[in-house]
Image 1 (cartoon, rainbow, N blue to C red):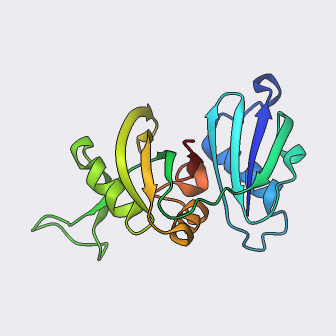
Image 2: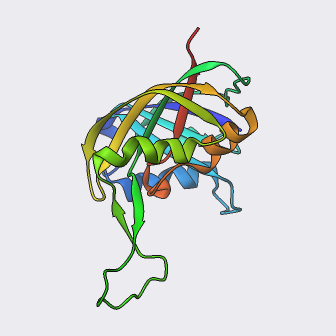
Length: 185
């Protein structure tokens, strides 16, 4: 399991400002034969692309990539306080109102109201992290993406590792859902 920070030259990465195009490029760099390797990514700035995957990415295949630092994904022991960061679209299932035809048995996925964010995060992190602080900033897009940051105490190291690899929320194929953690000390 690897975490790669790829430095990009925005002038050489034409068309890579679109989430779907970047997603295809990242997938090709990590899983060229489409064998099902897990991959998540986030463009944290115009110059930085972060990729989490089962295999080390061939970062030179990403348009505009100029260098990369690839490390094993960090593991945190139970009880450690960590900083965390997440870019995602916090959504939930809404039941169809009475009188409407219910085409989806589970309801329609819609963006949550900001007052629901903390409960949503607590639910997503349950068993892996105990949140101690949360902040967010709207990034835009459709569905709207938010940049969440905060601190938490690791409850279960294995569950946290699985969250970091499987992603959180909607849009994991298009640059959302990557949970990044780092030690505070």
